[in-house]
Image (cartoon, rainbow over all chains, first blue to last red; front, side):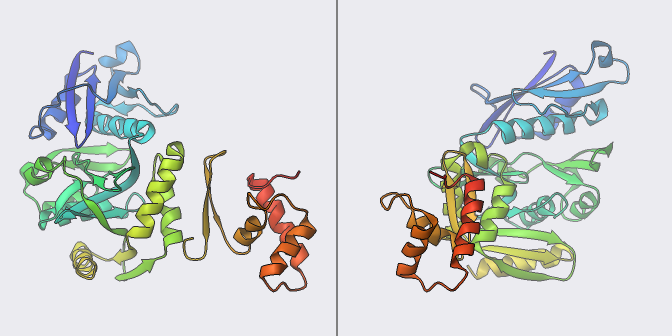
Amino acid sequence: MRHEIRLKIGPVRFRVGSDWAGPVAALRSLYREYPAADGVPDYSVRLEATRPWRRFIRPSVAVRGDHMLPDALPLDLAHGVLAAEIGMNLQLALGERRWLLLHASSVARDGRALIMTGESGSGKSTLAAVLAARGWRLMGDEFALVDLVTGEVRAFPRATSLKNEAIDEMLLHVAEDRFGAELIGTPKGRLRHLRPDARAIAAMDEPATPALILFPRFGPPEGAEAMGEAETFVRLTQASTNYVPLRRAGYDALTRLVTSVPAVAVDYPDTDSAVALVEHLWAGL
Amino acid sequence: MLEGFAVVYHPASGATHLLASPVPEILATIAPGRGAATVAEILQRLAATFDLDGDGLAVVTARLAELEAAGLVRRA
């Protein structure tokens, strides 16, 4: 392809090719502190013009790769970074067989991981970013990779994707030079990427032992309620993108996780109370 | 067992099932080694371990129909 960048995020190597320079330049800036991605890429993502002339006229980006959904809509070229992010997520979500993938953010402290999963809008990305700003190690905002053999969590610290109010919230906690350009009018509304800190990048190859699973939900009243193993199991099968194709190995990995790690549903009205709740629960482990 | 649910992975379909009582107990009566059974025999085997009340036959018949629909048991 005309433009290309290779990225290594945690244990996963990507090659992102593009018909345009813009998305690759934006990725290069977002991932400028990451180590060089040597070796054979695990996944290829292609950002292609939907029609040849669409490279120039009202440019429209189709996300293509080894694994594709049939009805993915093309995106505006101005949102090329989002297209690349969607492409990378999709390759991992549909293609990955080395780990059990949980749609979850994760942070670590002292080699132990806190996994936070929930619907889009639950605040799991924001919460991970805020905890990282308060001294936790960011492991990832989108996927937690659970090792099928050891049960440990591998980090996948791609740039954190913040949406709408979460952007303004994080600007209170983190210097603006850590942010990428703001994308306006995307299918998810306003979107801005936050570059993980140097510590998260330096430690991205270090696994952590899962210690706590949270199901955060943004909104009052503040509260925390222990979740039973059966409900946790079912919710995590829904939060996993590859539980079914992993078959028995996925079942074994998930059963081990659910029976060895406590899970708590937490409601929080603001990030300060969420951080306090997390610290309280963590101290009680 | 998770909180009283039996979690069953079915290799043939790749599906995972959460089974509430008395389904795990019914399955245990026809586990490999004990062999296939008629509904009446399943009731007898259950009665050897559990106190059954009057509608045992209806319950076992209904649960077996669900297990058959899920592909976990097969009519011989």
